[in-house]
Amino acid sequence: MLANLINGISLGSIYAIIALGYTMVYGIAKMLNFAHGDVIMVGGYVSFCSMMYLGFPAPLAVLLAMIVCTTLGITIERLAYKPLRSATSLAVLITAIGMSYFLQNAALIIWGANPKAFPNMFKNIEAIEFAGARISPVALVAIVANVIIMVALTLFTSRTKVGKAMRAVSEDKGAATLMGINVNFTISLTFAIGSGLAAIAGVLLCTAYPTLMPTTGSMPGIKAFTAAVFGGIGSIPGAMIGGILLGVIEIFARAYISSELADAIVFGVLIVVLIFRPTGLLGKQIHEKV
Amino acid sequence: MSTVLKVENLHVYYGSIHAIKGVSFEVGEGEIVTLIGANGAGKSTTLNTVGGLLKPREGSIEFEGRSILGVAPHKVVNEGMALCPEGRRVFAQLSVKENLEMGAYTRPASEIPETLEMVYEHFPRLKERQSQMAGTLSGGEQQMLAMGRALMSKPKLMMLDEPSMGLAPILVDQIFEIIEALNKAGTTILLVEQNAQMALSIADRAYVLETGRIVNTGTGKDLLNDDSVKKAYLGG
Ligand SMILES: Nc1ncnc2c1ncn2[C@@H]1O[C@H](COP(=O)(O)OP(=O)(O)O)[C@@H](O)[C@H]1O
Ligand SMILES: [Mg+2]
Image (tube, rainbow over all chains, first blue to last red):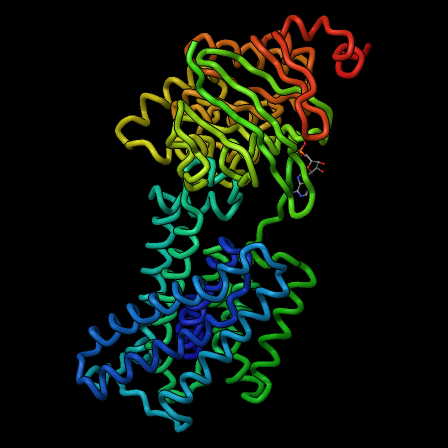
């Protein structure tokens, strides 16, 4: 029971870190970046290659994955989404889906279809016994990383000048421009942060579930997107709560109901929540003053 | 009197819609100039183009003798003009103080407290509400916040797009008093209004805009007594 709860929170923490990328990009650019899940996969491969082929120590591999993913995120936005800034949201959505397939196929060409066994970077660390439950080091690291990221992002958006500007841009790009805020830079920065976090999530995910394939990012990406909607898309604490709830529900459904039905139950809960709260758990019910 | 803003032969399109058809006007230092006109005449389009949000297809816009056409939209505020847009457009999810800080986005942090005090002097109400979310303010308070936010950049020229829109008469009077006070304190004002009576009564000069063209101009006083203006905009 306790072990399941902790594993659920841990998986949920990984979903939450991914969900942040969806939710922040949605908040700023008002688009669903369906390629976000595949950035996770790229992060996985980059860290895999730098550990296995280049012999990098784990922290350096994570750092390199973050640099590559950040650059990739900024590039995707510049090349694929920026030209569509004033296009219909359907056109942007289809472009994002296309970008997702592009990344998966590029990975297929570069790294092949055979699954890679991701190295365990915590292999020298014993699983921790806690109240009779065995908790793997990666589970703990995921939870701690999630907490640190949440605190850092909350401080960033509420205390720093650039973070406040980001919130201003998410509300009204025209008014933000009048203030002297560079909207394009702010959007790039959002993609950079989201993709950097995707790299961290990718490494955690591949360490916890050590099979790496070109499609590795899809399912966690969709679940994290679900988590973001669940918590209220656009809301940073919503991504955290949505992610953790989703992880806990998934692990419990797997343990007590059926591992085949676990995903169906996860998405079923989402549908029920959206029926009663269409804007998600923490989504803003916007009352506009005229 | 030196010219602060000089707009010449401005043409602005929305796709294929020709919204501004050769508008020219000037604003001199220290003046209150108003553009009046019916709904849809092109007042907001003109102001948004000067403020950098829209790009004209033809014409020139000079601020203190420098063309601003090549300036990136978010850098127009650095030139020394601020636009207080139609519908206020305050950042609802930011606090009053954060909204004001955004107004001073391009200025050094060390100068902000002083400017903040200056804004609070004009709008004591905003100081009382500084930690409240802007979205919870009343319409009149939001208008004051939008004006305060524009002032935070310490503009030489302040452009106001229908500041009286949707406000109770007593608040309209208050807003216009503040505009006059800002002008006395040295800010040049370009005011767009549908409330022609109020606008003309505080304006040094005025232009009448009709379907994208300037059809009349004169001092505020002249236009208040002009028969065609009376008939079209002042209710007979
Ligand atoms: N975003 C837009 N897209 C297309 N047409 C617009 C847009 N905004 C304004 N217009 C048109 O441009 C003309 C001028 O509008 P506007 O400048 O808002 O007038 P005003 O501020 O004087 O009421 C109107 O005919 C209006 O319908
Ligand atoms: Mg208008």
